[in-house]
Length: 149
Image 1 (tube, rainbow, N blue to C red):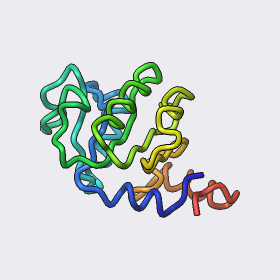
Image 2 (tube, rainbow, N blue to C red):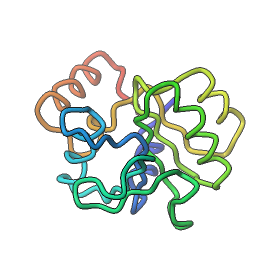
Image 3 (tube, rainbow, N blue to C red):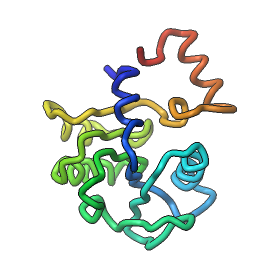
Image 4 (spheres, one colour):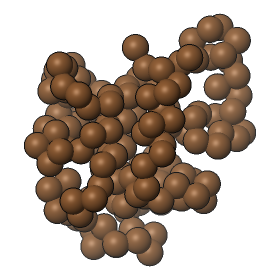
């Protein structure tokens, strides 16, 4: 079960790598990246097809990330998630947030019985300075007692 402390521990990392950042401004992976950066989250994009996204140096893979990266936000397509998670585990990344709709049973099994701080089935936009629709969704979850405690 995800707790508020797990979320706080994840968000305390600086920088945070983000796998699944799209180059297409109309895709969720790009808009989430841009919105989180506007909210002062220091993100490093991971995209195998980009050298730079929105003015930020991109890395082709998790393996290529600098060794000081301890947190990874995963917003990949489901068929890529398990491989990205496996690479992060092998690299020694300590905090992994698999954005809701990116998780798969295989990806979650990769992290079972590890010491990795795993957050899944949650939307990071509801927890890092939420506003507009994300703030509304957060309040709905809180009302129904489904917000991590």
